[in-house]
Length: 251
Image (cartoon, rainbow, N blue to C red):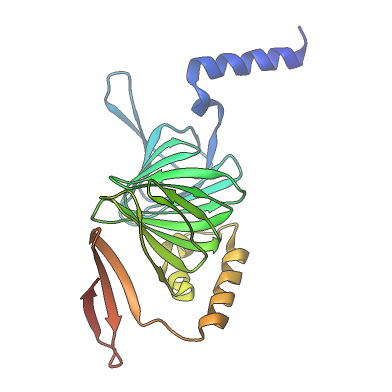
């Protein structure tokens, strides 16, 4: 029996016995604080493992972080996932994710697609792109494009979301809400998904070009900050007055 045939048989047996997610291994490239992986054991009780840099994991598990904890995983070398503090992510497969709570960042470095759902909302995202997703109180999530022109598809249709735009993936109607321009430079300065890690994301040059292009196009500062979406029709927005005091508004 040739060595190549033997390797093929062993890989096939692993695929049959353990499933596709066990064949594809994903490396933890950064982990600090309480960054954990939870899977269901034989007795249906959760098995929780503390993750650290250099660990290899499979999918079909929950990834969780505590306060001041962050994690980064390289998925099949073409997708980078960052998880913010106090977050819960259902890592079903390299193409299927559910954001239960918190914030995540994805760097999609080719034209592949992934499905990202939340408690109620769901969308398919096609790259190449970099984006941040943050869960909202209405069961959906905020989708913030940092680079590229990702195509976001829901049950209600699809939209191209260029860098510097925020759109709500609505929980109650499985649709996209209104899109808003955001200050990318301000976001990059304040986002811990960018600054809390030892290395910048691999798409940082593209993000920088998007910031430069936005600054040239708009030539000014924004006067509003976008907060939570408590319902599909209620978006919290803080308008910054000239005196420096914030005025809360809802749209």
